[in-house]
Amino acid sequence: MSARGPLAPRLAYDEGMTLPLLAVLSVLAADPGATNANEALPPLARALLRKRMEGHGRDHARLAKAVLLLKRETVKSIADELAAEPRLVRPLPGSRDELNASLPERFFVFQDALRLRAKELSTTATQGDEARLATAYGQLVQACVSCHAAFLERE
Image 1: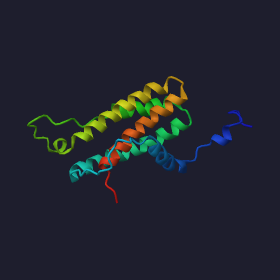
Image 2 (image 1 turned 90 degrees about the horizontal axis):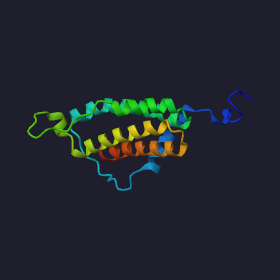
Image 3 (image 1 turned 90 degrees about the vertical axis):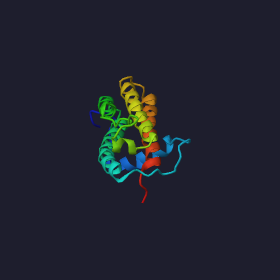
Image 4 (image 1 turned 60 degrees about the vertical axis):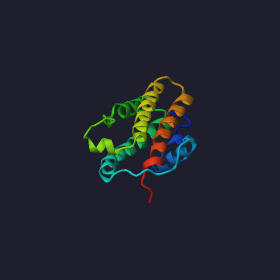
């Protein structure tokens, strides 16, 4: 038996579990009011957002592992990074910023939800309540899935 206790062998993390786990959590956390209608984004906006989303994918894989293993400091750190990420700003009336003006308002709503839920997850991570941690993580994933349901290009 290892120094980590009798459950340690059963709690070993399998890297191959990340995507299936995220898929299950996504279904469980899905926003029933979200529409599945896919909104078109201009090619430039889609290209710029793709890089950001790839980073989010890496963050979420690390975050899922940290939540599952109850690594609260890691959860807090990743959630803080997500919350502090530079955001695209809503265009001002009459602005000539074509990129931001090309994004629908729903994009900014989802972006704000992600930031808010990342902050909530960060706060919850330090409180020692596993049920609240799981709920806060599920709500963060819900924000991601809702945005993907609206904007992800389906093959």
